[in-house]
Image 1 (cartoon, rainbow, N blue to C red):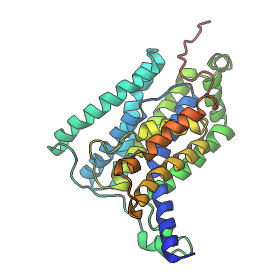
Image 2: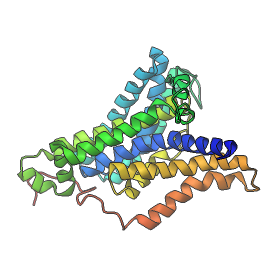
Image 3: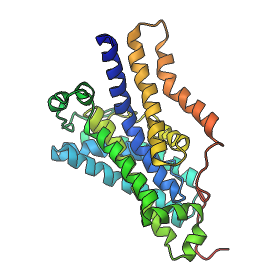
Length: 311
C-alpha cells in the first residue's frame, strides 16, 4: 500500500479509537444502569462532572491518575442523586436525568470560577503520561499504538470485564433478573434496591472516567462545552448496541469513526462547508435511532420504578 495512503489509514484508525473512547465509557455506564432497570439520561451531566473533577484532582495533586479517581468519585456522587430520585423517590427517570444534566453543567461552571477564578476553561494541568516512544517501537502496530492513550486500553478492558460480569457471574445474573423481572427477583431473595443502587453508581463511575478521558486524555484542561453531546451519543450507542457491552462498544466505534472521518476529510480539500463535516456524528445518531429503535429490545423493566410488596 502507498505510504501516504497507509499513513492516512493509520491516522483514521487512531483518531477513531481516541474519539470513541469517552463514548465507550459512558455507553457502558448506560448499559449497566439500564440492565438493572434504571434509565440514566444524566450521562451527559455526569461526564461534565468527571471532566471537571479529573482536571481539578490533577491540579490539586499534580497527579493525573489521582485526577481520574476524583472523576470517578464525582461521577458516583452525581449518579447517587439520580439513584435516590429514581429508586427511592420514584421520580420520573427521564426528568431526573435531564435535571442532572442541567444541574451538573451549571454547578461545574460555578466551581470553575470558584477554584480557578476564571470563566470558560481551566488552567492546563498534568496530563496522563503515555510512553509514545516505547509504543512506537513495537513492531507492526507501533505507528498506531503511539497515537493512542491509556484511556483507550482501559475502555476496551472495561467492556470485556463488564461482558464477563453480566453474562458469566452470579452478580450479572442478579442484575439482569432485576432489570427483566424485579418482582420475581425479589421473591428469590435478591435485593432489588441494592442491585439498582450498585448499577447506577457504577454507571456514574464509568461516565466519570469518560469525562476524564476528554479532559486528561485528549487535552490537559477542562473547557465548558467540551462534552458537547457525547453523553447523548453514548445513549444512542447503548440502544444501537442492544444494551450489551460489546454492542455498545461497536456502536461507539462507529460514532468515533464518524468524528474521525470529519477531521481527516477536512484535509482532503473538498469544497464542502465545515458545518457538513461537523454534522456527521449527529446525522449518524439520528439515522441509527430512527432505524434501530423498535428493532432492539430493552430490559423489560427498564425505567419502571419498583415498590417492594406492591401487586
